[in-house]
Image (cartoon, rainbow, N blue to C red; front, side):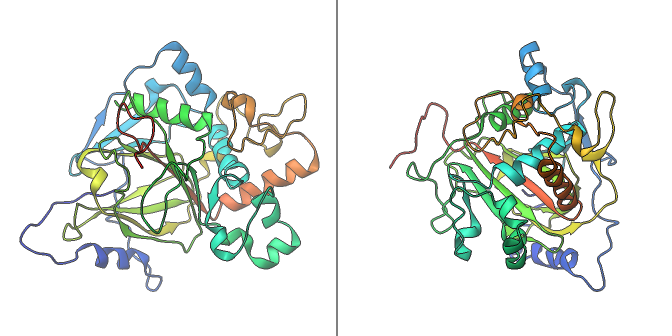
Length: 353
């Protein structure tokens, strides 16, 4: 995810110095040059594209506020890069945080835990991480990523039909709605990587170029603590820009920005908790998160076939209450990032072997 002006006269790496600057601990960096999206003259606000009544109902079901109120910005210095400032309700944020912590790190999805010799099998990572054994092992901090849909092969940097699961229906709907509002009617969610950042985590400079379809946008959802995000150009000789991504923000990388170098050198703890904000018609107590009468926990896993607000259910027993308390504790010091891509070219129904 990259931005900046390309300098064709030099191959000097202008990305690494800025990455190191924002990564350093002592002395801490100065954030005065980090862009606050929505407060810049170099931005262009984009009007949202309209949704049908049915799509508006779907948007509500996946935790989004009315599309007509969305604030969408394009960074003119980075063609194709757009930021949607938090279009989620507070309950919507809580629901997606819960999915990322309690549902997605479950089989048959892939996680990095296998590299630690940990095979979860049918176990819940979240519950295991908070057991005495998991706590002693430090299992909570071990989880760094989960893949859904087409699973990215980190060795070959490729996708294949042999490494493919399902994208949960609610995530497909969320991405389809967001993509349409920002002008991409035909986007299909086919591969997702959920990254888990602790307060000292970083993401090294890289480009995302494994998908056969590089014309489709990349959708990036942020929840929890804020990130300093660097985005440059197609080579590291382009000096990157730094911008903040806050909880609920959605970044869309398309066009030239889709092929740019990007990185996360810093997670910044902030006092704001938009996932706990009180809006009209919403509660902010853990016990008020979308309970149902039957007391179904509603673990989505990878086979959900129901609307979002009918799947994320919590009952009122003490175990569920404790899970939510721990979830809120987790998100006060961590960041979750969902990156969703379209893999296949239009008209394709599978990858060629």
